[in-house]
Image (cartoon, rainbow, N blue to C red):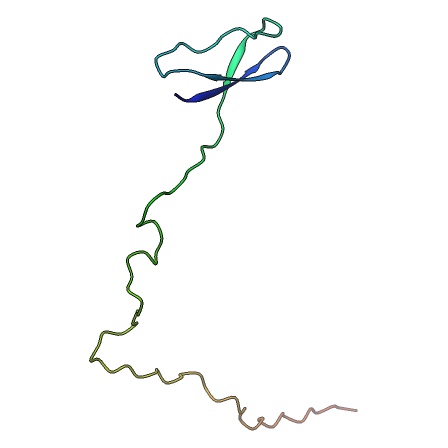
Length: 96
């Protein structure tokens, strides 16, 4: 049976109630008699058994390339780091 959490709209007390799905929701606060509202929160998830992790279905030796194929490392397409000789800058002319 699930546990539901309620909060009173008047005194802001929170209570927990273990109820069946078919039970009607609680409406009155046992502390002050105010109206109750259900509080929704995140649900805890527990993964049990095998098959939930990426290593569960793999063998001990994982190959990136199929057996029998040749794998060559790609050549770099980045230009060399040596810079070309600087072009001459035009001489500035100043008139006096």
